[in-house]
Image (cartoon, rainbow, N blue to C red):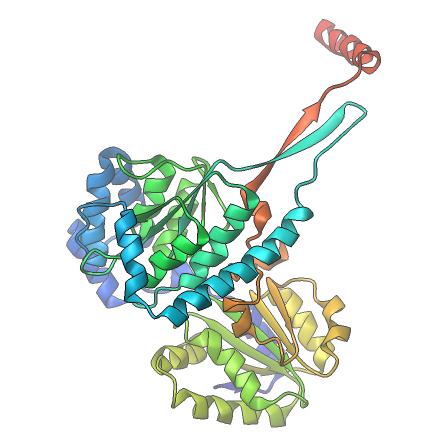
Length: 424
């Protein structure tokens, strides 16, 4: 792990985020695009063409791009009930119970959240009605790493909010199947249908509908570059929750922190994606050096060590700051997805945090627990968008209608004013 010992240099580097679109595509992805289209195209143009084709050719276009991009044959786009039932036999019973446990904690948290969101009133002829969105499509990323927790974190809040129809679409494996653990998670969450359509074709199918896949009112959930670009391009024809980038964790720690715990928090995100940003801010030279050693020790036993190391080298590292207040000032400017305070008396610093998707206080609340079983959705704002946006909540599945029912005595004056303006 690189350690930047100059606070000014470190702050400048931290706040100069490199746009994801500026990264050159990996060679294998460029070759896939060339095979699909017969020419080199930018990611934006790829997505534009996929969306156009899905709008024009529906299911056939979805199947075509499933083959071209995921190498998966998908004759039937909708997963059958029997396939979902069979998925339970393919995974360990303990894993099923773990998914149920996580779903229950997510459900309990969002039911508490809902009590503060369903606010209707009518006073003096003015009011509002809060209603659930009728039909939502969720994108569930991952095949080799199937990420069932992301599906739960999106589908359960939608169901708690009262969405009538909740559908999921997922990329497929080469045999055209969706990982069994993801199907089980979808069933536990109570979704109304699961479809085989990854990437931009999955987003486009939900945005405009096909013979098999329903047109939805809003599309939610994280995804890779092409999913993100597709959500941007269909927005306006359909609602979206947010635009998500690679995961970020900012750890603020002082000398009281256990270097092994700090390293574990950083690596928990680094292993997700080579483009993840695991960053440590500390005033302690000693802690910086000890965490660097702990990371090297822990990397030796990690299955995804290559990805974690690439993340640390590309977008991660440690910056030495003046003190903890300085670290929090930088954190507020950076607005991370996850902010971990591994300091003495973390509660005393929490009120100073203005911009963060999730705040994790102390060593007993590691960021990893938020990924799975804490309760709040782990789908959080990235790329600095925590300055104006929030994690996925039940509010993302609700909408408000203003109600105007003005008494006649007030209404008469308004009409007179309206007549005056028309006369002018």
